[in-house]
Length: 130
Image 1 (tube, rainbow, N blue to C red):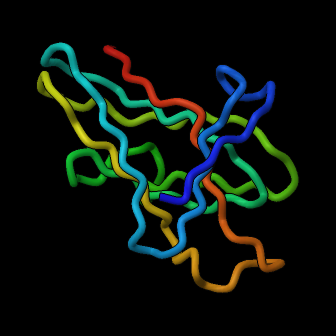
Image 2: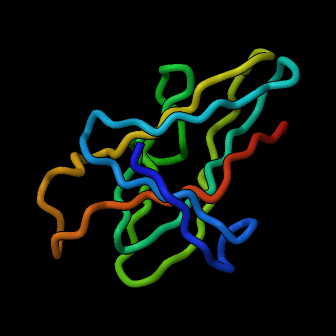
């Protein structure tokens, strides 16, 4: 995986996980443990930056219903870096381990503006019982 850590006061705990995918097939997986059956909302708190791109997310192989038209997380901004919390609708989840997978919504190998390779920053992921 093409990951590293970026330090800064904006990020939780002073550190941001950064991922620079090299192909459209590359994925960044996370394991999420559920203590008890129930309905949850899943939050992905990520950096929006000029170097970022749109990201697709799935849970256990199923696309996640983020509150956007196509379900993608738009992490790109034109001029600044900011932190944003993306939230799913309520998800019925069973106790146990689940796999959250992120993938760039566009091919990172395609020519980018100003020749910049897209970098995706994930600050933290959390679950909430409504």
